[in-house]
Length: 208
Ligand SMILES: Cc1cc2nc3c(=O)[nH]c(=O)nc-3n(C[C@H](O)[C@H](O)[C@H](O)COP(=O)(O)O)c2cc1C
Image (cartoon, helix red, strand yellow):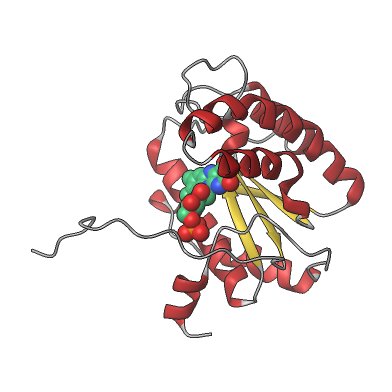
């Protein structure tokens, strides 16, 4: 696939086929993540790719809580499009049946999300992962919904960087107890349905 097509064809996929992803593809996708740039070359990421049904059950357990916690903010955000809100709530719960979920953590407990370049570096790696997956015809969706928890009454579907919510803590304790905070999760799988690209907003860049 041409580079431009990879960029344009990447979509957030929220419904997946059961078809497994080969370990070879998964390794290449994760490896692409590790080739992202990072602040002072710290490479501050640690990825856990979950694919076994037993391990996936642990992810679903937390995501059920995440879905309940995110529901009010999503219903408010999409008040004019209730179907979008309900689909998002459902997606968060079962992750669209994705056969693989990548959990992205900071690689050390000492690194915190208030060290802005750390989150930026992990985010660069995540975008590489999304694009590498797209190039293989594999769909993905980046989620920060697990950063939400019921103790957050800000009305937003995320927490401010310094806080580790109870849901992201549960994922860290289950999958990477010796690592730093969860930054995001990414679903991977062959798309059941590919939505149209949301319209891009005008005036978001200038050339001077
Ligand atoms: C940092 C970040 C967090 C996101 N969190 C979520 C999420 O929790 N749930 C979800 O369904 N989509 C999430 N998304 C996907 C966005 O909703 C999506 O990128 C946006 O609607 C544009 O659609 P597109 O990715 O198909 O271009 C997230 C994307 C980013 C970059």
